[in-house]
Length: 313
Image (cartoon, rainbow, N blue to C red; front, top):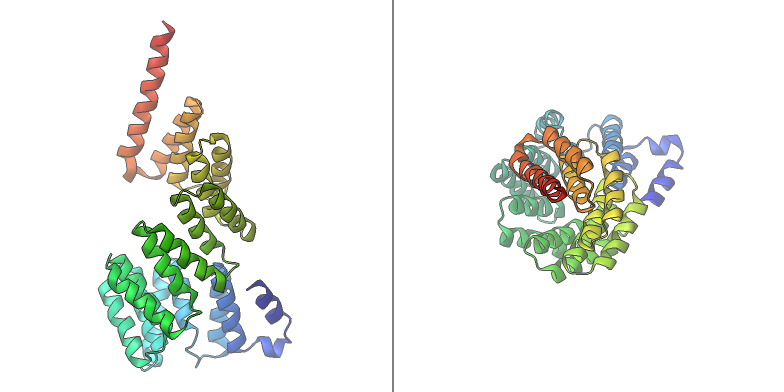
């Protein structure tokens, strides 16, 4: 994708300012999980080629990832008004309902897209994710497999199958499907993170560390790579390394309660009770919904301090 971006940016301005080029730029940014840049390019596509609906489905998924529900609803209305015979339009509408967690309604519109164009692989993949959200894994597998049958290089479907098998704890199958997705899109930091998570779950911690390091090298701004590396270090009882990784994650995602909660548990294992208490209290402030679990850790921490004080007497 980086090479594609470089080539597209080298085009003369009169070529670059076309709907097709802006669509490809948007797709490249999207595949790299740079959703803000993907949005800019795809909205440029709409401006320079208002009649072009191809690419709107990618823009709708971009807005889905950015959680821009108002903009996505507006886009869905425009898509439905523009061409009701277009599969892209119904994928946009389906994504709008998906973001509202109305999965059955989203599936209805994705099925409409498939009826309009049975070879439109993206609609099958989006349907697979909706079935996954409903925990209907058999139908999700069917959708992803159909997408691969239509287009064997549709890596999103390989990823979807890997995600299902990971949730079902079929780690060998999950690793195989994530690897197949990476053969098609080898520079995806997101895919590498998922492969590393599977390798960790499959008792391959050192493979997982190498895979997650590659993910971090490809995208140092991806906090998930460091967070998953921390989990591997914790499993290996390498708590200093785990804490170092978690501090990187905290710096890039300072409002993630789960990061502070995990840091608190690591600090506790390192005997740093005061630092652990600060981490737990921060986690509690950021996410009061998980208060019971966090308070249980605080109580254990206070209990261990009491034990130490008693032992001192």
